[in-house]
Amino acid sequence: MCSNYRLEYWRFVSILLRRWGRDATRMWLGTMVLLTAHHFINYALVVAAELEEHCKSLDREETCSERNIQSPSLEVSDADAMA
Image (cartoon, rainbow, N blue to C red; front, side, top):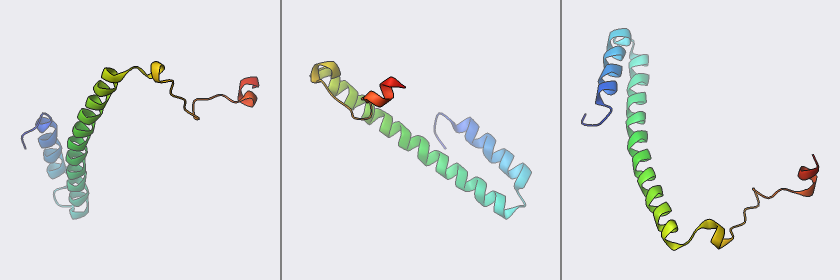
């Protein structure tokens, strides 16, 4: 395990083995949590990098106010404005 969260990873493995080393169900669940967390962290890093690059490319083109983007979810209806 060569990552920036390796200390927490091995701490979790240690706790998992000490507390539930003889409980197969909890060991399986703990292992699945480790694998899922590892996958999620790696996936989140990739998505964050892609999002950052996309935002930089948008900044290079023009600002949102210059594009006059309208979003139906952000518009306020007359009934909502009166409430």
